[in-house]
Structures are given as C-alpha cells and as structure tokens.
Image 1 (cartoon, helix red, strand yellow):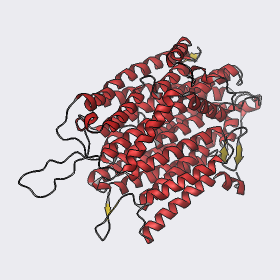
Image 2 (cartoon, rainbow, N blue to C red):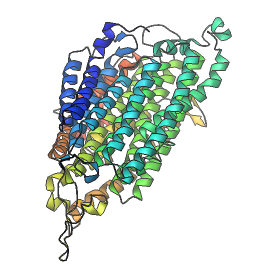
Image 3 (tube, helix red, strand yellow):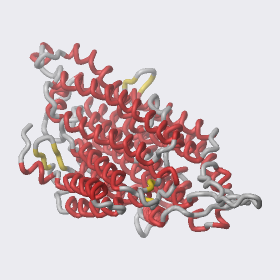
Image 4 (spheres, rainbow, N blue to C red):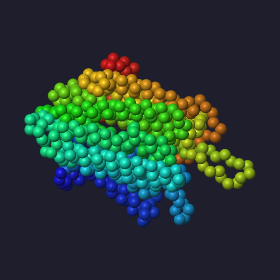
Length: 589
C-alpha cells in the first residue's frame, strides 16, 4: 500500500495527539511545565474538533493502510471522549506514591511525562480502529501496550507499583508475540498485509475448481490447518488486552499495585483494542453486501471455528471473573475481577456476530435477515462497551476523588500519621452520610454494571441477550448453533445475578453501615468532575439509550458493508414509557 498526503489528512487527529505529547514532554523537561494534563486535555479537544470535520457516514474513505468509515469513526469518538474523562481522573490522582518532588521540595501532580505517554497511548488506540492493514494494526497495538506499562512505572514508584508494571510488561510481550504469529499466518493465508485483500482471498478459497487446486501458494486443505492456529493466537492476543480467560490472571495483582487512575485506564482502553481486533477478524470472512462475491468453505469454517472458540471463552471468562470477585475484599482487586467478567459479556456479542455471519454465508453471503442478525451482535457489543466505559471510569473517578481515610492521631506523637489509601470495601462504610454525592454516583455506576433497569448496563445486557437468542439453528459441535447460544444466554443471566451480589455489597457498605473514620476526599477536584460527567452520561443513557444504540448499530454495519434495518426498535424513545418498551423487547425473545 502507498501512503499519500490524503493518508496524513485522515490521520490529522492522531498527529495532533502526537504533537501535544511532544509539547508535554519537552515543556516538562526544559520549561518545568507542571500542567501536563492540561496540555493533554487541550490536545484531545483539538483532535475531537478535527475529527468532527471528517466524513463519518456514507462510503468508506480509504488511503493507504487507513480506512475511515462508520466503525472507525465510532471507535475514534469513543476513544477521544473516554480519554478526555480519563485525563481528568489522572490529573486528580494525588496519591503520595504517584507524586514527584522537585529540587525545591514542591510536589508536582500530573507530570508532562505521564500526560505525553497517555496521549501516545490514545493515538495508538485510534490507529487500531482506523487500520486496514496488518502492519499498522500491529504497530497500533504496540503503541497501546508500550505506553501502558511505561505509565504504570511512572505513576507508582513504590515496590507494589513497580511489581505491577513488570507483570504487565512481561505478559504484554507474550501476548504481542502470540498476536504477531497470528499476523504471519494471516499474511500467509491472504498473500498480503491488506485486510481487504486477505478477506477477499479467504472468501475465495474453495469456490472454483482453480481455487481448489491452488490460490497463490495456499490450498483449502492447508488453510484448514492454519485456521485454528491463527484464531487461537489472535484470540490470545485480544484476550490479554480484554483481560479475558486465559490471559486474565494478571489483572487483580496489577490493579491492586497501581493507582486508581491507572486502574481506570487498564480496565477500559485495552478492552477497546481487543474488541476492534476481534471485530476485524469477523469482518474478514463476510463479503460486502451487493458485490456478488461467493463465500467458500474456508471462510465458513473460519467463522464457525471463531464463534465456537469465542463462545467458550466468553462463558468461562464471565464465570471466572464473577466467582473471583465474590471472594475479594480489596476494592481494586474486586473491580479487576469485575472487569474480567465484563470482558466475557463483550465476547457474547462477538460470538453472535460471527455465528450469524456464518449463517449468512451458508445462505449465499448476502442474506439481509442474516446480515441484520450479525449487525445486532456487533452493535450490541459496541453499545455495551460504551456503557461499560462510562460506568467504570466514573467508579475510578469517585475512588480517586475520595483519596484517603481520615488518619488516627496519637496523643503521644507529634508527627502526622501516614496516609492510608481507600483500599477495602469497609473503607466505604457510611459514605452516604459523609459524602452523599459520591455515594449516589458510585451507587448509580454499580447498578449500571450490575444490569439493573433502567440503567444503561441493563439495556446493554438486553441487547447482548437479544443478539444471542436471534441466532438460528445450524450445524455446530455437540448440538446445533441455536442450542449453543441459548446456553450462552443462560450463563450470561446467571452471571449477572452473581455479579449483583458483590455490587450490592458495596452499596450496602455505603448506605447501611456506619464508620468511625470516614474519608478525606483529598483527591483532585478534576477526578470529582470526571465522576460527575460520567454520572450525567449514565443517566442520559438510562433515559434515552436509542441514540447510542443506533450509532453503535450503524458502526457495526459499516464494518462489513451490511445494511441497517430498524435495529433500535427495542430501545425506548424519548417519549415512550420504559416498562412498556421492556415488555415489547421481551416479547421478541
């Protein structure tokens, strides 16, 4: 692929982020800049303005390895808006281990090094969403991983922080190596680094007598051997970033060892990268609507193996995450296990998209009914991802704002007692009486993550269930396809009930228990502002989720070129009673 000036125009928002990162680095090193996070916020605001002027609807705009379409525009908007709120959380991270002291003894919060590293992370994540080439996709993923463990080491200088950074570093190397092998296999299958060329080659294998003999250097029999290896390694690379089984075990230790601001980053941004990678894999085997290209047996096998594998990983991931969370007393470890469980929920929509696309392939590749079903799966995943980001960032914003517990003074000591971070569930006891706004915000976020109506987490889980139950019958390992997804739906519902147990335990501590110490609320005001912004977003999605769901559905449809039907019929409109809409949605099951 050739890179032209148009490519740089499409990448203008990402280039702005890189320039803002350079400003933060250089100004901090040579001019003593102490407002690095302000530079990051200004850079993100400018990038959002530039991206808003670029085309986001209609035909995809491609130049070189970059494609700007509805899917990439949705992911870019999600990344930049989430990054803005995360900047506020990071700027409010005033924990002692995260504070640097200059030569004059003045504390510096939010150094330029941290802000610049975070901006590079966001630029890399945005490149992942825009990539239409294996090389750019891998480079983007590395620009997510490398700044992440640098940020972990910068934010915490104590032993626990350095241990968390090293754990993430070594596991990130393993995940990157596995994904790189998957990239090599995909290149071997398609004979090109272009995702479009790989998809076209994959779909054409076995469709003609010539193809059954040889296509390039790959025969259908050789492709059948490569597919399980490719999918397994690609899923392992995505699973690490999503904290899904079997690459989940690092999450509790790393979350506990780092700061709340970094935990917020780990639980949100890498998950976006994992979702994008899996969505791109699904799209490889789906022909654009109306191009008349037949779908060969290799592409059908690709989709069948993908949805089987993702469905199994989804069921195990959500079960392991929720069961681990039930045993936790440390807040950040509990939220890490919760993040693992939500990775499993996200995978349900990916599995449904792959299974429905496999059904479309068996019907000729352009069945509008099957295409709509596949749209529901990917659209449901994107909708759930957006609601999860808002609630999770809000929780960590609230914890960052609360800061430390009130110290216990000794009558015989004149020294100030050491600060104690809010770490356990008991530290939230009586929060409703001492910090009612924070308690209310955290309760709303927790109820949304638990899937309690009418909060957006409920609508997200409902859309995932709807997409899974919409899969028709067909051949599958150990039964038929429909039975698999009915079972997966049952597992999802049972895990949602399990998750409600530990989420409600936190709410019980805040509203029904008393405390003898309380919290200082000594985190930065910016973290409190981030919490309030997330509260407004979650309440807005609760009352009017249709707009977000429509945008997510359109983003999912443009990834594969399918048409969009009225997929928002199950979502409540601005003037519709929520209970009646819920009843109508359930009747569709």
